[in-house]
Length: 279
Image (cartoon, rainbow, N blue to C red; front, side, top):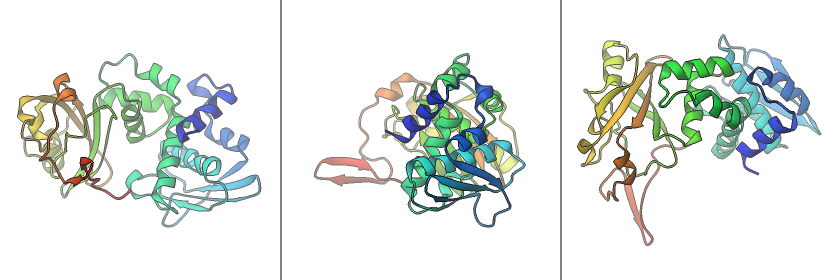
């Protein structure tokens, strides 16, 4: 059973069918996890378990969505990785602390599906053809989750050609793309001066809705100028911006192999794009 399936199974077993009933502390209690809120240094949550009981200590936050995700993340560890102790920084998906990166990614996936189960989430986004950040914010408010977690859930649903990325003035921090988007599309390491994200980072100019951009504003591919994307960005903590991209031209999904893009590696089986980041 995958982490996503494990989380969805819990929701089904508990008979939860309404968003309002997604009480993460009650779900934790049913799973044998006592939730305690105490100030922590260097991490957002810890998990210690003995036998069939565990204590999840959560760093209090002014953002309820962060607390809920932390609780759900620790339930994921308890269900998926029992027998280990964890110190997790679950507020920043690219900077989790733990025994292995894979464990943290699995707990993130579990938490995402526990807080935003597929059926409920799909119903929530169905009214929007291409949800922008304002609409995603409405969905986040309904599920009591963060905007970043909600946008990542949209990417994970894989029904829309969506890419989510985080940039600073120094460049790309992390990215996530819907699985059906060809890996040949390779994001630039630095924000382009023609992008809305550049305006937000360097001039604090807000981007209130999705706007059209030439795809070569965002991708390093030589043929990117033939296509268009939709872009919107919002500020995150510090000097970060969260960028939402839609591949507006469906032809981008069927573009041929690009041998020259990014840090492509070659093996006896052909070519692949090596990962940028250690997770």
